Image (cartoon, rainbow, N blue to C red; front, side, top):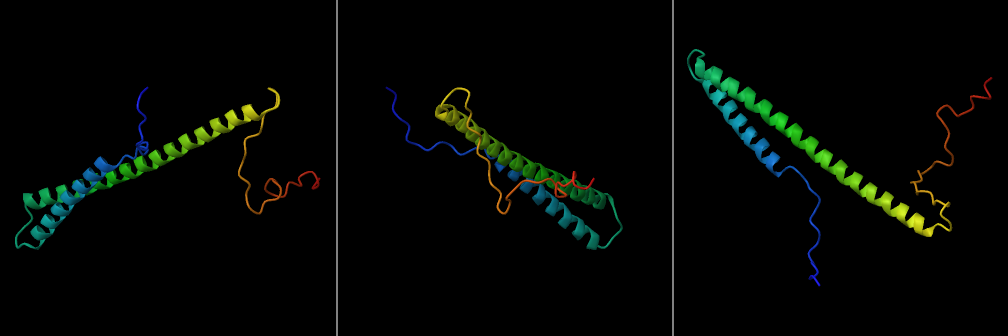
Length: 135
């Protein structure tokens, strides 16, 4: 018989460590380019190719860091939604399994439990549902 593994199961996949590294790296480069551009701007002299290079680097790295940050946030949100969907599917399958076991006959189906909303006593469509009384 195989030995039992007593370690807890691994946590669900959460992307972001590598993405966070690249977002921070792009932000550091952007800060460096912006500082270089400010130093060149306050330096005595006419605008040159160095000013253009510093401005281009500052704008490009800033846009890259923003785009990577948005992508990282979307990945984290998608991972959270995926984990919630997996939990919901497990709940549904477990309830269906339990309902099939608790049914008195194969034709009886136990309804899936739903959340009761607080303060609602009956479900009515918007507008009161008295469409027939208005005629």
